[in-house]
Length: 112
Length: 293
Image (cartoon, rainbow over all chains, first blue to last red):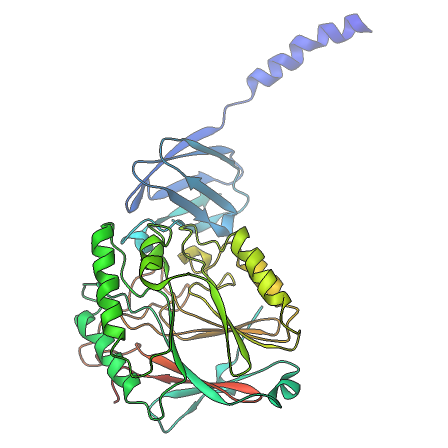
């Protein structure tokens, strides 16, 4: 029994290695824009959204997708996400960051 | 949550404004036996220091509004400003200069009882430090002729939270009130998630609403969205005021939030202030323009 399990282990280990790493999408925030401002994802494709800010504390909020991040200076914030619905979804900065805060936003497009 | 059918309540008044009758839920008749009728005025989002095409008379609009309030006869019992007194700036010295000028301007109001609270433009970049230097605490409560008023600060945290400490203060303040007390909440951001995509929400606003929910007669007056708006969360009514700088589009009505353009043919359109009459069974809201037509 023990020997059989031992023989199976390399198979499962190999399966784990075969899993593709999720695509990483870097999103940089600075007063008063995100780069990129338009993010295209595929329905059901796991990704990691990787946020940084070049100046002050920012937020990232896409309420229709249940996505939220607090982006603080000198840190990289990683948010795993798998889109569960297709369409265009607005996101905005939800941490007040100055005189252009109200215009700071973008769109996530989830394609089928 | 539910909207309020304005058609049921709106009618043109003879004062050059629009009237909205806001009914109290339950227990008001009991309360009313000891109540005095009175009215106060709500001004909001003056954004002193703003410069830009959406209001080519930015420096003249607040003085005109002050003149319009001073022309009211009789005068209100008191005046509230529900935040964004000044337009934001990264420069702390400039922020204090704008707060100084705002304070000087409102000293010209005939009614001397004035209740202020910050908006995110006043307080979010320094957690309310400059605001408190000029105007004191950012949250407080007071009683007036049988109505319990609560000013809530949902802007000193730049993330738009009331915060646990203030929520505990709110719970303690409410605990002193009977359940049929007449309560008015004054705040800047909507306490309910009106349109979070445009940051028109308070992150922990649902906790404040939950604390208020057991009280039978609660009405919220707020600003932030630069337009008249009426909404109900169960029996609690929420009324947003117009701004005194530029109107904003209706929630989600356009792809991008941006000020409604100034119309030279109809200057000051969409701007104004509100008269709130506390009557025994309702509040009568009258929307008044900056300039009479």
